[in-house]
Every structure is written in C-alpha cells, then in structure tokens.
Image (cartoon, rainbow, N blue to C red; front, side, top):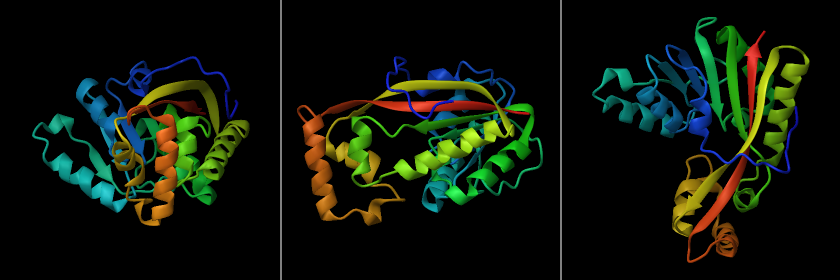
Length: 239
C-alpha cells in the first residue's frame, strides 16, 4: 500500500470504475453519501440493486429524503439513514459492498477504527468495502486548502486503512490511483460547489474569499478553470 503516487496516468470518471464491479442483485451501503450522486446513478442502471445511504449532515439528509419522496418509481428509491459510520444500526452481514466516496476522512479520527469494525460487522462473508479518498496534492487541492485544509484528517484516514490491512482485519483486494477532470465555469461556480457548503460556509470570512478568488484567477482562463484531481481507492475484503 502507498499513501501517494506522484505519477498517475489513469484519468477516468469514478462511476466507470465502479461499474466494472459486479453490482447486480447486491445490497449496497453508501456511507457519508452527501448528495448520493453515485448511488442514484447505480440505482437507475444496475439490476435489482438495493441501496442504503447514510448521511449525518442533517441539512443534506433532509434534502435527500425530500428528493427521494418525489421519485415515482419505487425501484429507484434509496433508503436514507442518519447513522454515523461508527454506529451502524443494521444487522450483522447485511451488505455485499460498502462504499465510502470521499467520506472516510470526515469520520473523527478517534472513531475511524470503530467505523471499520462496524463496516466489517455489517458486511457479508467475503464482502468488499470500497474507500475512495482524495489525495492531498494538485492545484485544485491547493485552492481548496486555503479555506478547508484536510491534510491531517486524510493522513489519519490512510493510517487507519493501512493498519486494518496490516492487522488482518481486512485483506487488501485492490489499490487504484486515478485522476478525475474537475471543471468550474467561473469563480461563482467554484464558490457554489466548494465553499457554500453546510459544513464550512459559516467559517469563511471576507479575507479568505478574496484570497481564494485571487488564487482561482491564477488557475483560470476567461473565468473557467480545469483541474485533474487525484484520488486513491482501496478496495478491502472482509476476512
């Protein structure tokens, strides 16, 4: 296992990576789902998939539940819960696969080990946990770090994932590094997608906004900015 990879050749939208997995007729758990974009995509395109999605941000969870109620096709609905990863109120061995899309590092570091233990408990025998984490490198990361620096929590996340493999809580099934294209049509678009979020919007003052805008302008052309954002995926198997 390695925390970083300097040269990453694979450029892909993560949904295509996920679709290489056998998800038909599976029961899935999406932890820290946010808007549940990938789960919604899977629900529409994978046969007989049953998805549970957990989000502890009450504002986002309320939006998810409201949008779910507007779906007329029951087969496209997702089961939303507010369970934290370290306290999953599901029965043992319920899920075939657990997904964490850029969410593991949001778990309090002192609860990461407990969260992995809970994930193992709710996974079926030989089940998989797919952990996708952004790397602390690249221009887009430099920009976001001005107002939301995640270096420490991402390092803690990797440390706990690695320890879970080394202590044989899980087996490392696969490790993948890739980049995803990220585009912003303007600084206002960047603010909307990255800064005006329920978990950080109240802590950003005027000076920080100005500093971010200056840095954004350095990376943009005619207001538009394009980045290749690097990620690491660790797919672990329950032993």
